[in-house]
Image (cartoon, rainbow, N blue to C red; front, side):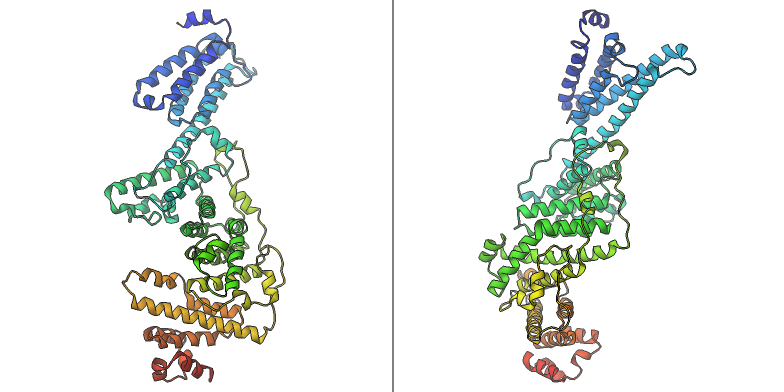
Length: 565
């Protein structure tokens, strides 16, 4: 057959290259059949060996100073194929046949090699062998990554799966090479979002032995509830671990958290009612170890997705003078009142993370963004992490100024406060500085505060603490009831401590704020909490107030006793 084909080969470009292309096309398109028929591997090996031994196919076309076009065509087909299993098998076969030809030519040419001779066919074929090795590594990586991205955790639907998301596409080496340095992490982040995996779950992939200690949480779904789910979980962790091994640079944990953080906030921006998405984005942001990356991602989140909605929420709440109704929230901010409450809490968390990252970055070096050897030729747009590292440093006092506002707004919405205009708590300089570029220098309030403004601030803080105590009291009465989950929302953070912190920033006497809180605890019958807080303050808060008055007196009489001190 071989000699018959050679005799009929009127043009080397007409038969042999198209023959190889047709053979590979059929092979790559029949991936499922091939994987179930091991004999097909032997058939392809025999066919390629036969074609490659023909002088017209290899010897005459091959330039001793370059890579063989015959094998390059085959590698190109494998690089472009989205059927990575079939492509990997064909690459192994191509590598094997190339090795055979290398050995054969080396034996034939060995007697002709002289000292000081130029590059000969054996050396050029060795270059082909190196290209095969590179392609094999790329295809192995691509196959593992594609297997991971098409895997699912459990049968229960996550909150993320309830929204419309694109199904995972099939990967190819070409797509990964053209996807930019952040393309691999971005594809995994999309998969993480689809499965709604929690940040601790991702860390388990780095240390698989930790998964044996107990069933990890996956976005609120405990997949160990069913034995079948437990098996699926172990499979996912194994695939995740393999992906980390194949891509130690591209899927470095901090980089992966950065991409997951961005993916969640992008999806939240599309579906602002899904407050869980923004919360999860903040969770991933916290897990970014490098302060420079964390700072850049947080600042990009603020500028791209947060500041516009926060501005709308602020002016709406200032206009109505209370926690706005659901209809107004949807009209002005684009989300329900419940979603806006969660949003304001996330804004407060985001700014706090941004300030902490700014401080930590002064003592931390910039990260070195390496790339795996097999993927150094990747091309495409700048990666998310590289973009984050280009961000300017923030003006810390301006971020702190916004953080105070976010805490105030969150408190108003969380406890449905009335008769409160948040912007009235700031002077003209403070109001003008809001929602400006966080990296710019702005005039901020300084020095003595107008007594009238201090009075307004004091009134707000006492209202806030009264609302906190009311929520605590309700949680005691409704313990175990369906309303408990709503009322206990006060426990999402230490509101009394936040109120004291606000007092410091608003230049209100902190001791007065503490005393009001203790007094309200007694007035609402939460004696054990009042005594606990009083002991933590060394008894100073209630030193001059008789115990009977603490337990029986009204809030107003108790405060009167305090202020008389």
